[in-house]
Image (tube, rainbow, N blue to C red; front, side):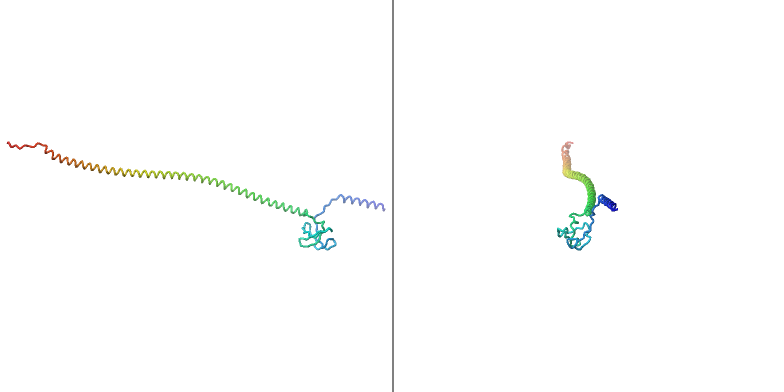
Length: 223
């Protein structure tokens, strides 16, 4: 019976060892670390259950495997150095990475929105530029038309001035001709008067001369 029992115990032990070696486990980084009043587990706990990932300010280190820290609550005490890490835990790193990812996504969304606004503004500026270009073309054409009208007006004014000067010359010539005509008319009337006077004088002379030219009758004294 004793040998049989030993054999069963040995078999159970070997089986347990085999099962233990075959199972894989991972250490959970979720830890609640006590803060003690001294550098050792024999000292009393002054702040309990400091959760994993809590940032602690290092005040002093010792060779006993404990570190003097200050907690976010302001408590100063000793904690086991083996549970401290110089980098944030994986969960915090993951949260930080997720937060950065969300920030990046938000920034990307803002950038996309800004890009869309810039594109819309660029399209609006292009439309405004085209409109201004068309307006400028219209203004250039209007300016050219105004210049043409102004040139025609200048030419017309010059032509009117020339016509006025020509009209004034014609008026002057007409006045000269009128005066000359009046002078000729007066001279003609004067000539007619002289002619009439000459004729009258001639008639008078003829009236005087003709009787003298007739032979006078001699008085017949012989009768």
